[in-house]
Amino acid sequence: MEAISQLIVPNPYLAILLFVAVSVGLAAALQAVPFLTHPMRRSKEKISAYESGFEAFDTARRTFDVRFYLVAILFIIFDLEVAFLFPWAMVLQDISWFGFGSMMLFLTVLTIGFVYEWRQGALEWE
Image 1 (cartoon, rainbow, N blue to C red):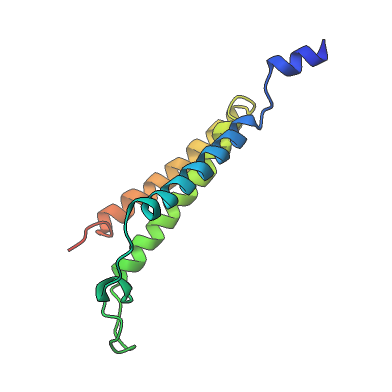
Image 2: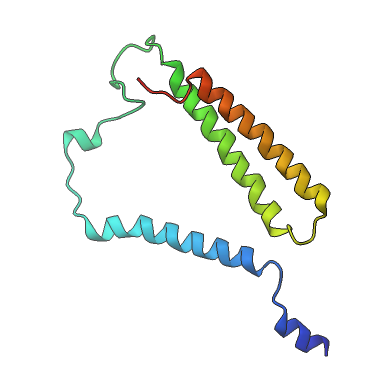
């Protein structure tokens, strides 16, 4: 009877394994398609170094705009939010109302931080 129940109820990690397999396959396909479909023609513009929108062979003392760093920090914050939401969503059926409430508190604090950044003008690009 136990063997039959194992066939009916899939492994709880099967969804994660399927997600990883599809992600790796899609990433490999998206990396391979340009090499297979586009001819390789080198030019001066293609092989020149490009970094942060500034000329590569300029003085090292040039200052960067702080907005580059603000955008990077905001990306990291919201990227971490997704990293916390995925495992929480996987165990949502097994956790109690305390787990649900703690995640809602986390999202509330994150939303307050987002609204604060928005009102400070960190998301406006001139």
